[in-house]
Image 1 (tube, protein in one colour):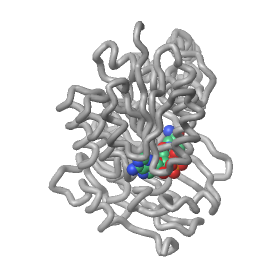
Image 2: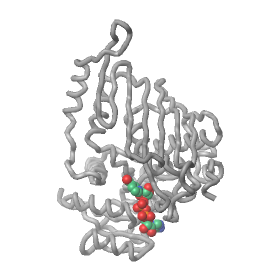
Image 3: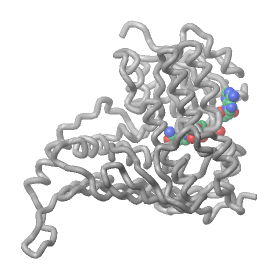
Image 4: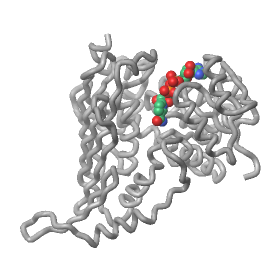
Length: 372
Ligand SMILES: NC(=O)c1ccc[n+]([C@@H]2O[C@H](COP(=O)([O-])OP(=O)(O)OC[C@H]3O[C@@H](n4cnc5c(N)ncnc54)[C@H](O)[C@@H]3O)[C@@H](O)[C@H]2O)c1
C-alpha cells in the first residue's frame, strides 16, 4: 500500500489506549493523525502515546473535517456513538465503533443508513471473533460435517467491584445503556450468535441486580429459540469470580466448544454415546487448516483495524459490520423486554415496538431498586 490510512480517535479514555497500541502495531498501514476528547488533558495524553505530530481536538466535529483522516475510531461511552458516527459518515469517513454499537435498534439503523448513504464502511469492535480458536470453531460449525445445531449453551462470566461503578457514565441505563448483558457479556453473545449463524426466533429471559448498587442488571439468563428449531441457554454474569467465556454447540452427533474442544459420537448398542474417532479426526483436520491472518500479541484491536482496512481497500463488508453489531443489540433488547414483561419475546423487534427506541427502552426497562 502506498499511502497510509489516516486515523482519528474520538474519546481518549481507557479503551482508546488499546486502539492506539493496535494502530502502532499496524504502523505500515496506518497513522493516527488526530485524537479528540472533551478533556484536553486526556486528549493530550493519548496524542503523546500516538506519536509526534498527532493533533489534539476538544470538539470531534472539527476533527472529522480533516482531509488526511479516512477512519474515525469511536471510543466514547456507549450512549455517545451515533452522533459522532453520523458526523464522520457525513464527511466521508469510515467508522470503527466500539461495542455496543448503540443503545437501540433505531440508533443502529440510523448509523447503518448513514454509512450506506455516504458510501462508507461501519465496523463494530468485537475483537474476540479473531481469536484463533474461535476461528477454528467457526470453520467447523460452517462445515457440512457438523449438521444443524440442536442445543447450545453460553456463559459470559465477569467480575467487577464497586470501584468500577465510580465512573459516572456506568451503572445506569441512560449512559451505560445496560448492564453486564450490554457491556461485558455482549462479547460472548456476539461470538455465540455469529457461531450459531441462524436467525433468532424468540427469547424468554430473566435479569437481576444481585450484588452491585447499580440500576442496571449484573445478571441475565436467557433461553433462546432459533428459526431452525435449535434451543440455547445463555447467561451473562458480573458476579462470577473466575472470569471467562464458555460456549458449546451440539448437533446430532458432533460437539464443539470454547475453550476449544471437539467431540463426536455414534450410538452404542444400548443407545448411549460411543466415541466416533473418525469424525473427531475430521473435525480436527478442519480446525488445523485455519491459519491466523495476523499473528500479533493478544489482546489487541489490530485484527479489527486490519479487517476494516481490507474492507476499505477491497470494497467489501468488514467481518463485524454495522449489521453484525446490530444483531447483539436486537438479542439484548429482547432479553431486556422479556425480563421486564415476564413473557417470551419474538424477533424481529420492529420500528412500531416501543422497545425499538432508546427512549422506549429507558421508559420501560426493569431497573434495580439497588441503583436508587
Ligand atoms: N472492546 C472492548 O473490549 C472494550 C473494553 C472496554 C471498553 N469498551 C468500550 O469502549 C467505549 C469507551 O469505554 P472506556 O472504558 O474507554 O470509557 P472511558 O470513560 O474511559 O473513556 C471515554 C472517553 O470519551 C470521552 N468523551 C465523552 N464524550 C465525548 C465527546 N463528545 N467528544 C469526545 N470525547 C468524549 C470521555 O471524556 C472519556 O475520556 C465504550 O463503548 C465501552 O463499552 C470496549
